[in-house]
Image (cartoon, rainbow, N blue to C red; front, side):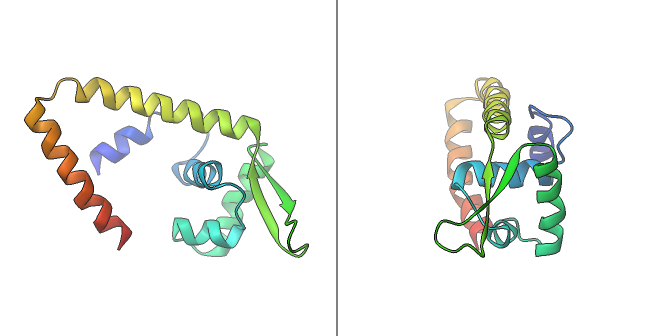
Amino acid sequence: MRLARRIRQERADAELSATQYSALAWTASEGPLTPGRLAELERVTPPSMNRTVNCLVESGLLVREGSPDDGRKVLLRTTDEGEAIVRETRRRRDAWLAKRFATLSPDERDTLAAATDILRRLTDQ
């Protein structure tokens, strides 16, 4: 948990909460999403996600658009500014981790690689 908390500090926009950044990153990586799907991915209630989305829309990082398939559906799309924040945050996090990984022995890196697979399986359950 301490590692995750430390990595979360490496973000391009300190004004964004961890929840807001996570929603923005999902939208940037998965393409346009409905608010309901975004709530599912984040494992939060739709009203909670709606508050997060409203903040991101007001900040100009997401836009709401009508679905080309169903005019009743709303899709969330990341703006260019939102995409830039996600890219820069990922760059910062990768640089922070790379600097620390460089100090590890090959055996320690192998151990982390094995643990990564196990942790991924646990989080996907």
